[in-house]
Image (cartoon, rainbow, N blue to C red; front, side):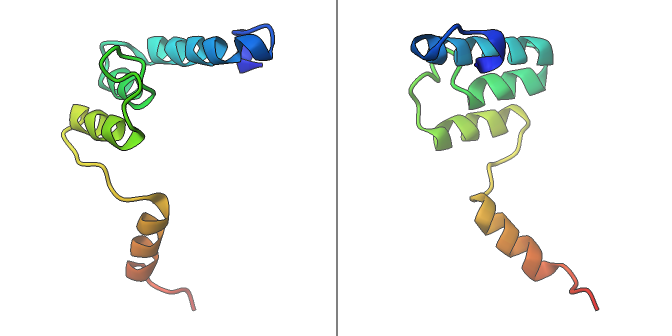
Length: 86
């Protein structure tokens, strides 16, 4: 469970957090990708408990972009602008 970071269901939340922290560490805590991931997953003290939309907004700002709409909105937009196959 949680990639070996926990022993059972009682330990799952802590194990999942440890797994995410290890992933961010491997991405590079000082690297843009690692910083964006830390914000996205709420691993920084000021991001813990923040709504997902707010975390995504801050993560996008790390790259100097704005977060787009939901996946279904993106899919509708991209499918309407892409050419139809024959």
